Length: 114
Picture: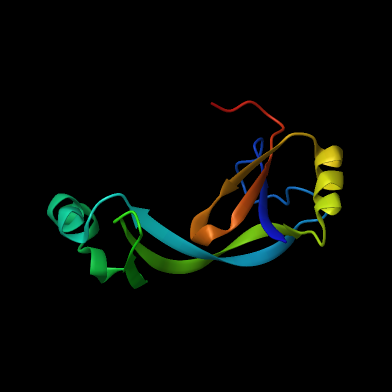
């Protein structure tokens, strides 16, 4: 299982843990509206929806999404659930969420955030 990983306390691009390696992840941009609505409301600031990105699609919720340029991030890979549990025991609380392109993100929760 591969996860994007970051620390709550880090705002830069510092390596979040000793196990982290550079990975490339898909970067999807989703808006909670239809394409026509986006173009009516935001084209004067951002251009037409189809002008940027590729693989323009509509999600099952009816939102518009497009693939932007891939991004570099930090990642960790575990071969078993017990490896993930050991990681959590070493680093403490983890916040698990889905980030861009359905990549699951582990946030090492080592500082307060709202």
